[in-house]
Amino acid sequence: MSHKGRKDRGVVVCISGLTASGKSTVARMLAKRYNLNYYSGGGMLKEVAVEMGYSPGGEDWWGTEDGKRFLKERLRNFEYDRIVDQKLLKKAEEGNVVLDSWTMPWLLDFGFKIWIDAPLEVRAERLSRRNKIPIDEALKSLKEKDETTRKIYKELYGINLGFDFSPFHVVIDNSNLNVEETFSVLCEVLDRIVFKRGV
Image (cartoon, rainbow, N blue to C red; front, side):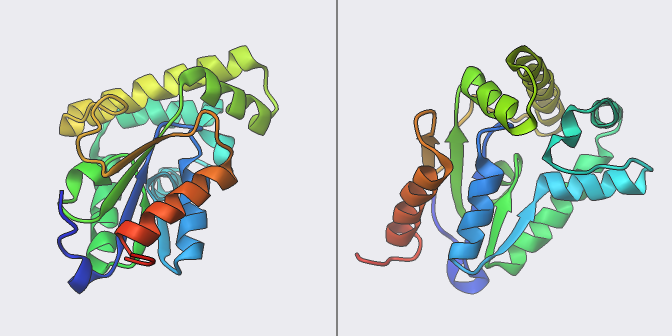
């Protein structure tokens, strides 16, 4: 995997990982640290949901009844995801971005790609703390979300989300790392490999 396009587009970093892996928080931190623009596939999908008459709000919306209805609607119409991906592809072409996305690592042939990994049980504990919900409810919510998300991208692009790591330059298991520690490790990686600092 090359860093093709870095010189003419500026830096493009893709962060991916399943729900409650910490990818969005770390992606925003990296964007701030390196003065890059941050764009989220989930955020853009919520914009599409608003246009459809939904009222998404906060990180927890996907687990609400309203959010689950929208997920079912997405399964019936993949056009919403295609719209989001076209928007993200345009942002990637502009460069100097951190993209928080499930699809961009597969759809882009340039950029530096990171997968943040964490087992279901660890993610459920995080979701339980974050949303102040029982652990069994968090587990159920994540299983449904993972299954739906995987189905959408498998049918849409043939992506095996969470199983195929071939597009990624770095895969980091943050089961035993907090957000700050994950951020610190990724800064060291980006400093040396992408920004060529301290080399």
